[in-house]
Image (tube, rainbow, N blue to C red; front, top):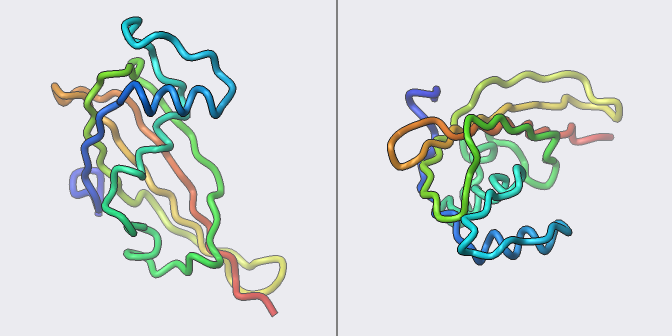
Length: 139
């Protein structure tokens, strides 16, 4: 699985109602729908909701145990603003995996997942990089 051969591809409509919920939940003052607002940068973290229910790439592809996994970090790079009304296509692919000894015993596994977002014309809009960590089973 690579950028050209993603693990998952999905489409998402940036809806005003979801923007409004996100802005309110994060303490931002939302703008009116007719203002064609730019969504907050972290709004794209909700993209996973557009995957089929129960989809979890780290578990399905790498066998990570959900009970021992956590979201390590996530970063976004934007090539243009994402606005309410945009229809985006996302492609999720695995950039890398590595492991190291855990401080409580066992091995910690890391996976870095990239999601590329394109607009309706196929132009790159944004990219997300997310690190998923599976902790060791402990003692």
